[in-house]
Amino acid sequence: MNSDTKDLYQEMILDHYKKPRNFEKMPHPTHQANGHNPLCGDKVTVFLELVDGRVQRVSFQGSGCAISTASASMMTERLTGKTLVEANQTFDSFHDLLTQETLSDDQDSLGKLRIFEGVREFPMRVKCATLAWHTMKAACENQVQPISTEKT
Image (tube, rainbow, N blue to C red; front, side, top):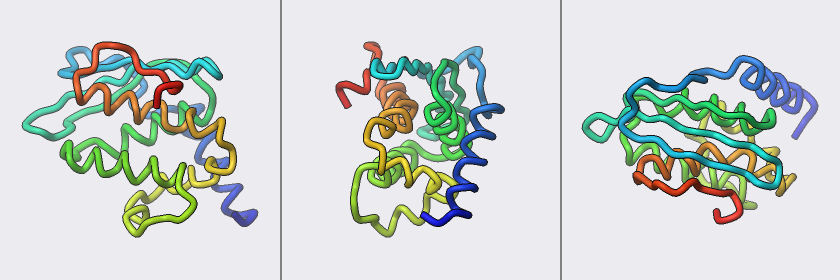
């Protein structure tokens, strides 16, 4: 990662951390789930409004580090309007971006989410970046038990 890319990465992460998008409790979600990263204390609740298999709206609340909050914020922007199939494909691509050595072609479709690629170099931070995403999947599956990054 070159210096300009690192600067952009830090700038975008800090922007979404300081001014998270869709950071609110949705009044009447159709789905929601809670997630927790016990290693660093990040906690998140993801709220979804699903209509006819499409994410009409997604929001979150919680507390966490800059990477966790920024990832949740960017996730809400990315998934709004997507079908559940597209949301799951985006989850898979994002997860692979953070955990796989070689990148697949579909990761080019991640757009701004590619800024999290550098997190792969810090395995402890991968759980921070993926907490909201695992929680979103749990919400889609109507999982009642809170998810923990220690089980993902």
